[in-house]
Length: 153
Image 1 (tube, rainbow, N blue to C red):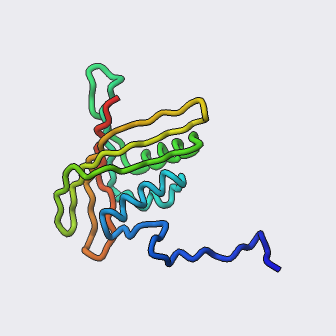
Image 2: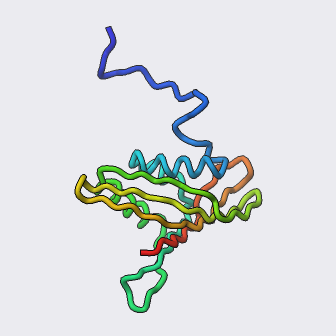
């Protein structure tokens, strides 16, 4: 008899694994989308470098200013977003700009984020993220060192 409380482990060795290979830029973006869709703070945290900085333009202040926070605040903020929503769908669109060497890559990419708090409270956000990705050596995974969000609200 099969125990429903101890199901067989899933086989993720197929040609289309759930998580991307973060040693590639596309693998990092695949993991980013997965983290939002599954609201997985472990996968999300693995995307961020220890010295991560998030920068955004605060349109609620006069004059409008750029504000920033580090990795710890970003993890708390993202966890709060994950807990407050019923569903998040993050779609990465085309790469607008990429400047790349073996250890540092600058990527500018547009995205669409569908945020559902409940069936009556939903919005779509279109924006652009400018990311600075780093890794320690060519065999290591890419991590986001800086995320400058250029979403116009």
